[in-house]
Length: 341
Image (cartoon, rainbow, N blue to C red):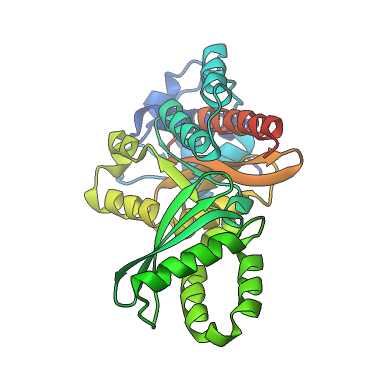
C-alpha cells in the first residue's frame, strides 16, 4: 500500500498515541504532537483517507480514530522505529539466564518469567523439540480401572505427568513389572526406538502392551513432535483495558491453559530465523480478537530448538516487545550453545 509521507507520519503518530493511551485518537491530539506540525483540519482529511484505505476506523461519528489490524500491520512492517534495550535490562536478562547451573526446565521457566516481567504481558516459551523424544525414566501408576498415570523424566530432567486411558485394566503389580522392564529398555533409546524393540520382545503379550503404549504415545504425540510450552505472566493481562471484559479474558486464559494453539503458533516461528509479529487474526487458534504476539526462535548453533514470545493486546509496544524477545532469544541461544544441549 503506497502512502504519502504525510499520511505515513500521521499513521505513525496515531498508532503511537493509541499505544500510550488505549483510547481513540482525534485530530486535535495529533496536531499537538511536536513532530507533525499540521493543522487539525489537514490531519482530519488525512485520517479520512487512511480510513478509506482500511487502516483506521472510528467507533462513533464524533470520536477519534483507532488503527485496524491492517493499520497495525502496516505500522509494524514499515513505520516502527527500532528500540534497543538499556544496558541495565540486558544485564538483568543475562544474569537471569546465564548465571548458575540450572537444568533445562529451570532455564526456560526463568526465560518466560523475564519476558513477562520486562514486557508487562504474558509470555510463552516452547521447549526444544528433541527433549520430549528421549526419556531417562518412565513409571506407570494405576489410578482406577482403565486409567493410568504416566510419569516420565526426560534426559534433560523435565518431569511430566499424564493420564492414559486404556481398554485393558492392569493391576498394580503388572504395571510395576512394565515400569521396571521399560526403564531397562529405555537406556540410550528414544521413545520410538524403545517401542520398536519392545514389540519385537513382547509378541506374546502384544495386545496388552500395545493398548498401554498406544494410549501413552497418543497423549504425548503433540509434545513428542513439537516440544512443551511454558507460560507465565498471564495475570499481567488484567492490567490491560482491552481485557477488562471477563469473557475475552477467560477465552485467552483458556487458550493458555490448553496450550495447543500456542504450540502451533510457536512452531510457525521455527520456520523463520527472525522475529515474527502476529496481529489479531494472523494468530489463528487463540480465538481471542485484539491479541498481538511477538515470537522468535532460539538456536543451538544453526539449529532451531524452540521458540519464545510475548502475548498481549494488539496495542502493545511492539518496539519494546521485539527488542525483548530478540535479546532473550539471543541470550538463550548462547546458553544452549555453551552447554552443548
